[in-house]
Length: 94
Image (cartoon, rainbow, N blue to C red; front, side, top):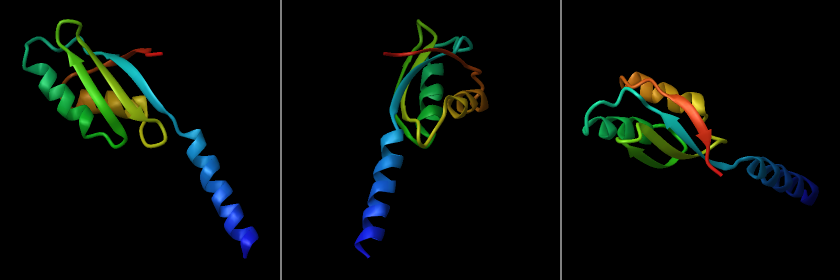
C-alpha cells in the first residue's frame, strides 16, 4: 500500500514539475481605438489557465501570463480572434 501511495505521489509531482507559467506577447494590430484593449483583455481573461493580462493600446500588444499545462498560445490567439482581434505571437518574455 505504501508503494502505491508513493508511486501516486511521485507521478503527481512529476506532472506538476512539467507545468510552467509562461509570459508571451501577442501582437494585436487590429486595435484601433482606446476601447479595444478592454475587449481583448476580457477575451484573454476567459481562457482557462490565464493568470495575468496587460493590454497596451499604443503598442498594439497584449502580454499574457498563463499556465502552459492548462492553456496554449493557440488558445490565446483563438480567443482574441473570436473577439474580432486577430493576433500573432510576438515573442516570449524572459
